[in-house]
Image 1 (cartoon, rainbow, N blue to C red):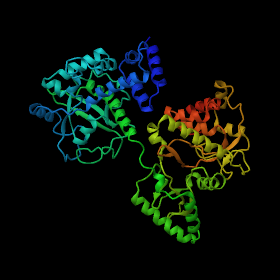
Image 2 (spheres, one colour):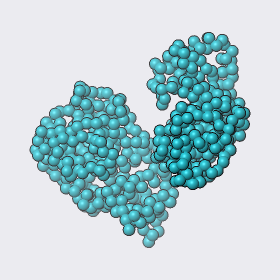
Image 3 (cartoon, helix red, strand yellow):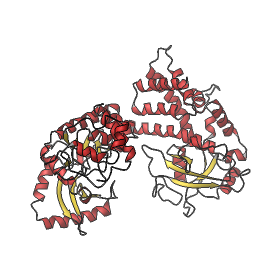
Image 4 (cartoon, rainbow, N blue to C red):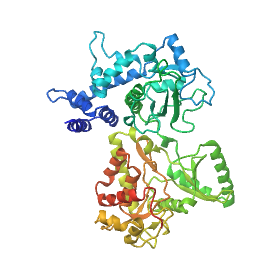
Length: 562
């Protein structure tokens, strides 16, 4: 019955005409609940078929009540001076999260884990607000009752269990749903027995930002950035007297963890409602102007251009932080430089091919190649407007996602029209070895038959593959020009519309299913990305995907040796 309720409520939410972030908030209300079945029944009660209200209206009312509840977590509550002294005593007058070897340049704040205001879910007449029932549904009645009892405990030990010292910047982010706590070395609070740790004298935790849409700068007590070393920080809580000076309650930290996930997603919803920032493309030169400028520039002697590139490279290293890869460097003048050695010069040749055979594909424009002072080969290309889809997909509406899929599908059709003029069926751009870790860690091929390529893909395990999937490699495919790494870190959007595709170092001529299976591998844990890929390719290559998924388990870090 419980699973049936979960499935029914999930279907009600997903079929309602809501935004993606609204779907996410409502689904998380069920999935993050202590008892998802109980939370699902609360959803179903709100959308009873015996009322004339549209489902969307009922769900948005539930969302509104849920927002009111979790927003209460952000309320700042003062602490009595005498109790403040006890918190300072237990935490040794230091921010609990700032490392002990750091100086404290600001006074830490006594911060409630969960404010007593959560008890006030009643209106001025004492009538329970609908948020009250949501708390019971989300935490179970017994869990909600335990929370109310702990928040009602006004003796020193009760308040100590609900307070700790944090630097002001961290305290603000913690209260407002941008940071969350979980036990160290444990992936999920579900695996942690908070009851056994209630009277501990020592506890290890980690604190981390909540994604997506990370909140701005968060500073430690010494003024350094919270995330200067890692996206999370380990810390230890200790007390010399667990009875008189108890540590912060694991139960309250766990409850905070669950509630602020929702609070942060309401913050994300507000940011999405603000719309996209101004288009970057308006400040970029048109492709036509870039071509003219490049052709004039190439009239200069090679040694002059090389001197300029080396100076630009040094200036870029000083001005711009390292990008997504150590082989890529942003330069002044709207340019990027990238080392050629990893792709054996395949990427600049791919950009040349696209410029000649498919100029409407939004790829960088190749400017030139050069050697740095160490003798390493680089190529220079134009920067494209936009941001990585991987970073903003959560912001994109269903309409924008569908448009992205349709635009990518159109571009792939253009790429598939590029003729293969190499002497091989499956090879890199110039007919050399395939540069793709999935095929082989160090490159492999080229090949003149798909059967030979398949031998490499399943090298050493083909017998076992055939035992598990007898139809493996039974279909043949056309050879088409392929990006080979259409992961959403390599796809750019500007104002929600496709603006560029970057990182062509693995490009070449591959079987027509290759783009799909590589994309699905990169997005194997991102269901939103998979939905976009499915709109592009549908179920055409499900047989090939089954084989690839089997091989991924055997070769999780790439492919077999050539």
